[in-house]
Image: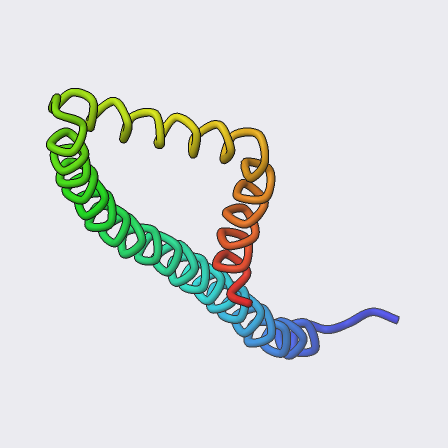
Length: 121
């Protein structure tokens, strides 16, 4: 069975809107995925920035507290550098405890936090 020209034209006119709709759907879907990715990335970075600011303030607090404690201990022990050595020794012990006992848990906690932010759970 042979098609005449009018049937071919009707068939072409039938498929043209279908292809246009499919193309529009694909473009819209890609745009949606791009926007979702941008939202996820911006959420992760904003959380990172907020936590970094809080961490910096906390570090400044601990630094000032440490200096104050070192000066106070230095006055008690009679030599200023004794106080600073005591505080340095305290931080060395805390660092060793963290390294040997808590490092793996802290790493897992940070990884889980990042993954949950990326997956928006």
